[in-house]
Length: 97
Image 1 (cartoon, rainbow, N blue to C red):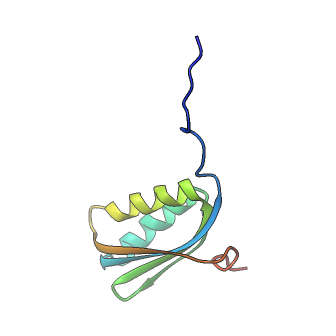
Image 2 (image 1 turned 45 degrees about the vertical axis):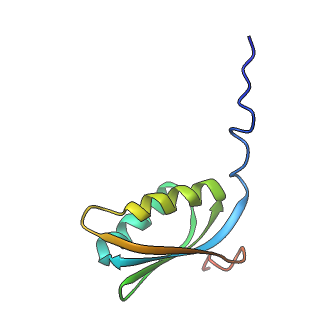
Image 3 (image 1 turned 90 degrees about the vertical axis):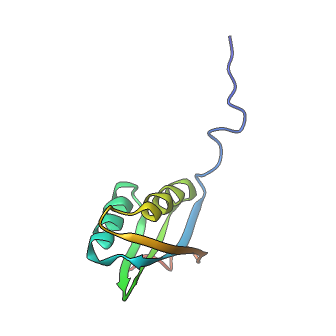
C-alpha cells in the first residue's frame, strides 16, 4: 500500500532573510527567550532591544523563521506581545561578522 502526502513536506526550506519587530511589555526576559529560540532553530542574525520593541533580524529556512515568529508572538509568560510585524530583507544583511 502506498501513501502520498501530496504537497506536505514540500516547501519551507527556501532561505529567507527577515526583520521581525515585536512591540509590547517585553524587556530582557523576552530578548533572552527570543535568542534561545533562534539558537535552537539554528537561525543566523541578531536580536536587539529598543525601548518597548525587540527587533529580530534573522536568516534561515522559511519554515524555521515561521516557527520562530509564532513562538515569539506568544512570548514567555512574564512578557506581553501587543503587536509584531515582519519585513523581508536581503540575504546577508542580517548577519554581522
